[in-house]
Image (cartoon, rainbow, N blue to C red):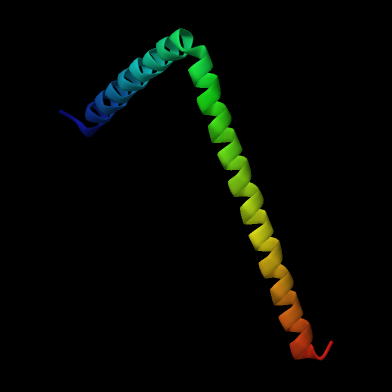
Length: 75
């Protein structure tokens, strides 16, 4: 077996698994739309909170660093 055909077999197997997962997910979402919407809302809120918290931490750290630079430079 050549490496080219082995690679295409791996890609084909992966594509088949991905297609199966997509179909399974679609069946679940169609049979449980409200649970899916709720779960996505929770994930969205968590991601938003993490983003805001990270942004605040970054701004605070940047302000601390700029204050340290002005102290060193005598400003």
